[in-house]
Image (cartoon, rainbow, N blue to C red; front, side, top):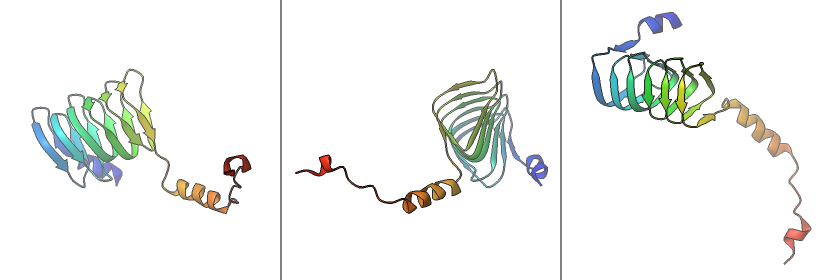
Length: 138
């Protein structure tokens, strides 16, 4: 099924220039120029080797072979390939940067949504800390 989704991905060719907001519920391959914002829910975005994107991106998986200037937020994974150039902050559960890729920005690795709940449960089960008497003096 995953290979079918890749074969059926929407494609923006290298001669196309788009300015504005892109959103949808399918995979997208960009080899042209995009300026604005891209929102793909849980789907994949692939920026091809000729792709030039100036946009904030939210997607399930993001793979960059070309140039991307903007903040990236992926529900799962961000991959910077050896020809990829990214300027902007990345928020994802996993990140892969190939040797030769260019990246300038910050990375924030998000834990799986179920893991913070486990940490909260453990913190709630722990006894409440007793205040330091030196701090409670009037």
